[in-house]
Length: 442
Image (cartoon, rainbow, N blue to C red):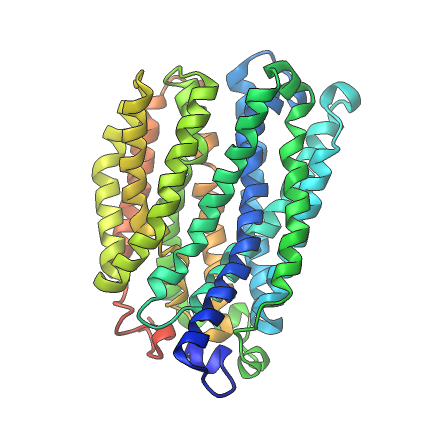
C-alpha cells in the first residue's frame, strides 16, 4: 500500500503543505528516536566509570567485560520488543507503539539513576542493573522497527532514502548526545567523582528527555490505515510466513551491518583506550567529532541511494566492508596518533553509511503494510541481538583470551553474509511494497 493510501486519507494537500507535513512527522518521530538511543548508548559510554561499582574485580578488562555482558543482555530482549511492538504498531498504530516504547526507556533510565552499587546492596546491584537494561532492551527492540516503518511510510516517493536517513541521523545523534553530556562531566569533575556519582547524571538527563519526546509523539499523524490494522494477518507471525525470503534478507543485512556499526561506534571508544592505549578523554573527543561527521553523512548517502537504488547501496557497503575491516581495525589497534585514528574511523564510517542511511528503509520496502512493523522489527532484533549487541563482548572476550587479532576477521565474515544478502535482494525500485509493487517472494 502506498503512502497516499496509508497517511493521506483526505484530499491531497499542496506540494508545499505536503512537504511541511512530512518534515513535521519526521522531526516528531526522530525526537523520540534520539532519546531512545541516547538512553541506550549512555550506558556504553559511562561503563568505563561505573563498571567497578557494580562488578568489582580489580581487573579493568574483566570489569568492562561484565558491563558489556549486561549491555549485550539488553540486546537479547530486542526480539521480544520487536515482536511485541511490531504487533502493537501493525494492529493499534505506529504512533501508539512509539509512545509506549519511549516511556519504557524513560523508566529504565530513571531506575539506573537511583540504583545502589555493589558496595551498598551486594549482588542485588548488578541484578537490578540487568533488570533495568532488559526493560530498555524491550523498548529499543520495539523502537527500531516501529520508527523505521513510520519514517519510511511518511517519506515522499523518490526521496525515501533522504527522508528515511534521519532515523540514523537521530540514532547516531543519540550516541553523540551521550558523548556531549559525558565530555563536560569529564572536564568539570575528577575521575573519582565521576566513578562515585557523576555517571548517574547522564541517565537522569535521558529520563527527562524521554518525557518531552513522549509529548511530541502524541501529536504525530498515523500512517497505518484502519483496513490494514483490522486485517486478520496484521501483526501476526502467520502473516510473515509468505514473506520468509524478506525475513532472511533482513537477518543477513543486520548480521553484518549491525556488527560493524557497533564495532566502529560504541565499541570503538573502548578499543582505542583498552587496545591502542589512548587516553580516555582523547578517545571520547575523537569519537564525538567522528560521530558528528557520521551523522551529517547520513542524508548524503540517503540521497545517493535515491539515485542508484537500495540494492546498489547495499552492495557498495557490504563489499567494501569485507575488503576494509581487517586493515582498518588492525591499524586502529596500533594507532598512536589521534589524528590518524580519526581518519581511519571516518573512512570506516563512510563505508558503513551506505547501509545505515537506508537501514530501516531497505527492510521496510520488503514487507506489506499489515506486517511491516513486525517484519522489520522482529527480523532486525533477532540478528541485532545475536551480532550487533554482542560486538563489545566478543571483542573484549577475544582480547581476554589473547586472540584479539581474530575479532576483525569475525566482523569480516558477518559482512560477507550481508554481501550475499545484498546480491540476492530484489531491486526495490521495481519490486517494493512502498512503491506500490509487490516484492517477489519465495
